[in-house]
Image 1 (cartoon, chains in turn green, brown):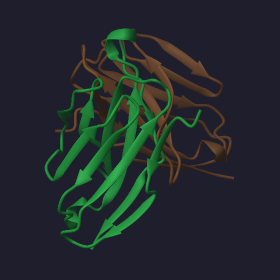
Image 2 (cartoon, chains in turn red, orange):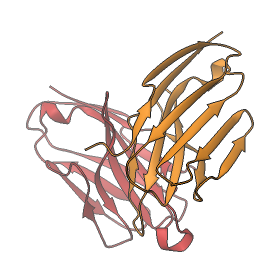
Image 3 (cartoon, chains in turn green, red):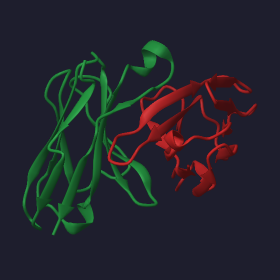
Length: 116
Length: 111
């Protein structure tokens, strides 16, 4: 099993360009998440999908959109990239909270994005 | 608002030393997880604690959940260079699939 995979691993964009970060998991998890990690800020939740067909905003959703394509895939789109979106982006997945009573998340290797 | 504060932020020690990392909050959490993140990688789950006062051991690592479920600690005995990394605590609240992450403790173990 590959776990959680993310593409691309690195990306450089110019201000105003758009791009989509891809994420897939093969653990049959119901819930998926997108985080950004900045120095001194820890992991901040951008969007999440508790189950297939649903998406909800997290702590820092402005400037991003998401699509839960199917149970396996959850993509993050930057429509018009800004330098403030320079960060490391992590995708994660977990079993449904209701099934086990707590939330253990499994992370992908990250996408390092620079916006010039 | 950062609900989970970790201390210390940075820790540099020699191989063989013991250390403790703290994760504190004024809020109650239904569960608490610890993750370790190595440079260039995503966080990897180490342990989940769900009961106040619970203690779990993972080889040289000992995790404790506070009695009131507002704080947690991670103790490493005889640290090794392979323990180097960013340690993150994360709290779960109620019937939600969201976690709140702490700011992290960056540990460097020198050989």
